[in-house]
Amino acid sequence: GMSDAVEKLEQAVSGERCAVEEVDWTQADGTCMLGDSDLILGSDVVYDPALTKPLADTLGVLLHARNEAWLALQERDGDTMADFLRHIESNRLHHERVECTEALWQRASALLASTNSPDTQRDSIFLLRVKKG
Image 1: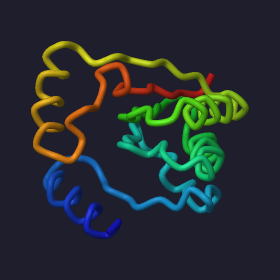
Image 2: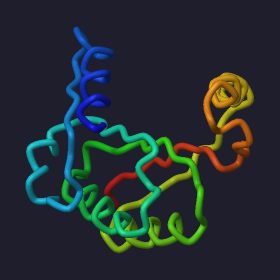
Image 3: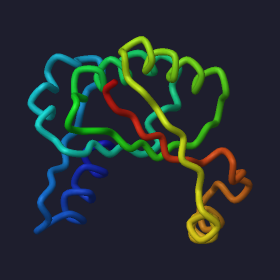
Image 4: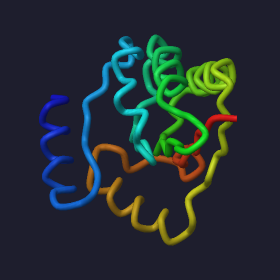
């Protein structure tokens, strides 16, 4: 579950100058305390069409001129991703798609082969850098 993921992330960053927070995207106003973050990281967060607007709205609350978000994404459905990018833009945020390097793809494909996703296409996995205008 989500708390297992949060717990594992907390253990992974123990001793580092960062924090792990579980965020409810449907409660964007309740996340304003995270706005002091320099960098907001997310992984595999664009998958449910119903959550694209709440996620974009939450990023709209959290991002300002001095921080940005990096989202590691897999595009499973083109319409869902297009909706998310539209919602990002409607929050007056800018986005940049960063493709995998060959070295990163080699590491990722080895990991994917050991999971239930061995047929993942390289061009479906990317980083999305999101920042305020």
